[in-house]
Image 1 (tube, rainbow, N blue to C red):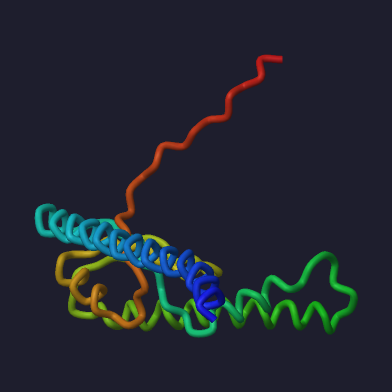
Image 2 (cartoon, rainbow, N blue to C red):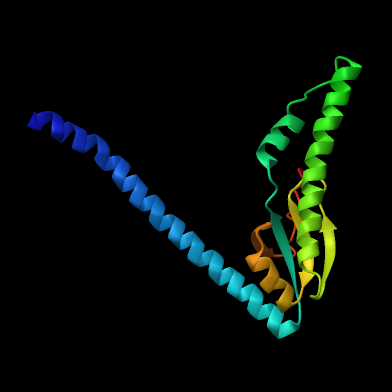
Length: 160
């Protein structure tokens, strides 16, 4: 009896350690995210506005994306073409609705839309501190990141 209890304990010990490490990592990521958001807010107050990328909460996104991506290759019939189009439009419409909803929440603040991505749940904005405050508490927003340019790496030429 004691031996089987010891074996069970040994089996659950790695799982327990994994859960603890995972929890610590999640807390560290949340703290890093908060400091990044604090830096974005500070920059907005200092400069008047800041470029941000907003990640939208789109209901059913996983299912809509899977449906849109399920069609591969050439359509076998007009019915398949219609189904492909309907799946693509359903995804696009859901993202557009979430975008519209978020932009509506920003009324009364200073912001400008830089880019809307039809098949990706993101919007690039320039927002003032008041707009950032609205976005931070919006149920439509999953995340905010500063929109900063990144240098592209050019491929190394072969020389041949």
